[in-house]
Image (cartoon, rainbow, N blue to C red; front, side, top):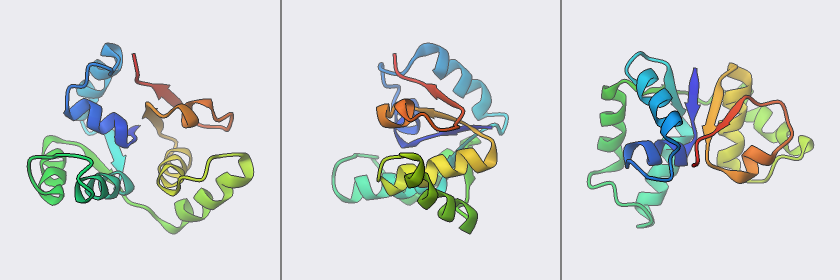
Length: 135
């Protein structure tokens, strides 16, 4: 399963030119066959950005989420095991952003490959299958 972080999802849905064409092809191929997902935390982050007027979705965050799910994007829940593992990531030198920790813990425990643009996540030396989707 491919797990998109928040920026990767936004870049895909906004046709951002900074997104690597190869990554876009992989994501689009998987999107409609049930093999691309996001953490529920990603939808929380997007709703927070919209609430703070840092992101214009042109509809409510709830509607935007439903549209992505109707298109075939999967939503992965956050369980207690991921929440506890997110805290433990700090002992492995992972940075303090709680949303990133939840998303990375979801990827690690689920055996997913994380697609990200986040330099801190990409530079982290821990055990995580990840792909840089930036050009």
